[in-house]
Every structure is written in structure tokens, then in C-alpha cells.
Image (cartoon, rainbow, N blue to C red; front, side):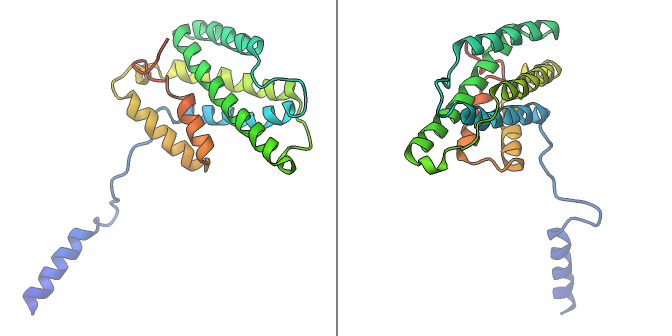
Length: 191
């Protein structure tokens, strides 16, 4: 009986970590701040869509998009970041944001009672977008070693999962965040 008790005690000590120790966890991704900013920027899609709903303003605005991309190229150059990479990343971000807006418009057409009754000021929305864009360019510049590394894809995927959980993103926003971040890793970037 003593041998049985000793065996049970030995097994139970193996099953749980010693006092003060914890189970191993995945380290936070170095890209988490960047992906968090991308998610915040995607959040502007709701107000942008609401400001355009029921007006003549189109969801896609090629002149505004070009202005954003031109500004991104300038900012990238000021922060020793490849302007081409920065432009591709923000092209993806814009595409993801527009996709959310198109989805909202489709939902509102199908259910007019769900459509917004107030229109946020588009100028204010764009000001928020511009602020987040600048912060993202700084994060991209600071994370260049990660973006150029073999481990970039894993770091990006961990950051996307973590940010999706912390923001409690629905399926639409998760897909949009994946689209917005797809060119973060230099190997994944397509011209």
C-alpha cells in the first residue's frame, strides 16, 4: 500500500508544475503593436461607411487612396523603410477597409432598419485614419528586422490571432485583418 501511495504521489508531482513555475506559453509577437494599429485602422470602416451611406460619395475614392499611398511613400522614405513595401502594405489595408464598407452597404440594402441614422463627419474619420497611418509607418520601420526575417510569417500570424482575440473580432473583421496584413513579410509581398 505504501508503494501505491508513493507511486500516486510521484505521478501527481509530474502532472503539475512545481510551485512558482507555470506552463510554457507562446511569447507575444513583436508585430502585435503593428497589427493592433491595423485593426484600429480597420475599425474606421464603420464610420467611413456610415458617413457615405445614402450620399453620392463612393466607397472607393481613387484620388483619396492615391493621396494616402503618396503620403505613405514619403513617410517611409523619412523613416528608412522601403516605400514600395509600405505602399503595398497600405494598399492591402485600404482594400480590407473597403471590403468592410461594401459588406456594410450590402447589409443595409438588405435590412434598411440596420442602416445608420447619423453620419459621422468624413473629414474627422480621415483624420483618424491619417494618424493611424503615421503610427503604422513608424511601427513598420521599427520592425524591419522582423519583417525581413524568416520568422516573419509566424510572428504576423501570432499577432493576428492575438489581436483578433483581444478585440473580439467577428469573422468579417478577422478576414479583413488577415487581408490587411498579408504583405507584412517581405517574402509574401507582391508588387
